[in-house]
Image (cartoon, rainbow, N blue to C red; front, side, top):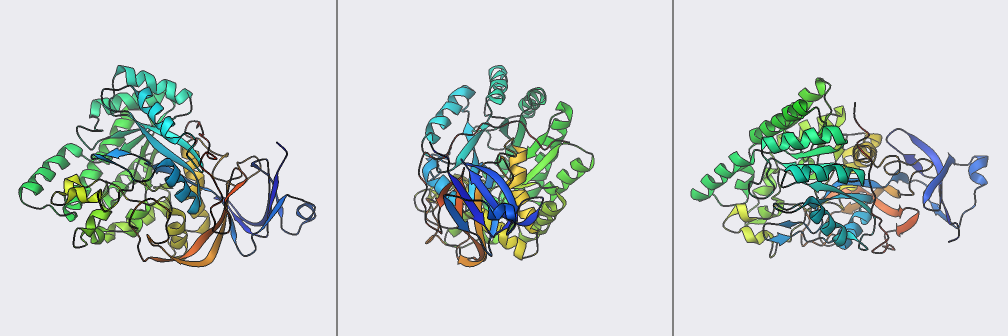
Length: 468
């Protein structure tokens, strides 16, 4: 294959560390060089293709470290396949996802992982990696953890929620954490007290409280905070780092702050839905609230301030989507008359980069922090940096030309996710992805999809690069 060179001229290059007016040269799928716009070096460059980025941002492709394509849940499957979900991600300026392979109770870890390899193989429009959900922690699955770390699956998700499905008890969690302390893996925790929540669910349904809003009311803030606290203490006992997924509430943030103030390797992720939506959405009439059922649940608006503050102070390090879409018609509707049967999850992989750019304009975060929480830190947290998450010589040519002035209205009419509603329907935002390169190949060209299923490669990961 002959050498291909792409030159991106005239844009403002934004990384987690810098903002510089620079031209970017991409050669054979990787970033070859940056040089000041108009400099002799840049003027001397030639390329097969030149992209004009004048008055635009040139940013690293987004890294969404929490997606669930084709996830089986509640008797149905997430509506995005690896093909549709990764195309939608590309449209939204995300060029790498880390999805969750699932070990089922009574089955080997390897069996679950192989099933996910098969689902994704040849289907993805962008690069992808896997975390492993452990649903059955025992001697053999603990041994398998070591093998997975060796082959580039370096993070393991455990659930303190969903008894009978994904749930692990404190003893199982401690054992997995002890194993990760020796093999270099990172434990990701769904921190909610599922045993207590199940009691409250049963009581609510018995009293006739069946609407979607009660999903939020039974999954109480204090039960997220309690589980977060317990997970942190177990990680301390094990001497292992901990990453708490989809943090939604002020009291849970406070637990992370306290742990980090002690110097512990404890990290937190939040998601756009907790930053932009609230229990007001869950309470929408005519069962519309079912569209917003996810776990951890949406919280009252006043919790948003604590999440934004956590992102500014780096007590929360990452914004991922937890993209897990279910159509309103035929899927969310499974829970009419019983909120506990509504499949849990929201669509969002296409909206994350844009919503966070809007947060820059709204004064919540800086431009560099936008790139840090959406690109650089997820890449470092999950062993993909500096291949992913930055614009620097040697990095993959995953680059987004972003128009910070374009205005758009988020809607099911215009999104590319395979789901029949938008969680952000009618929201007007400023900023839009214009062109996207994945490993140097243009996959979105001036708002046209030019990519293909199978371009995306499975990407093994190193261990966490974010530890103290």
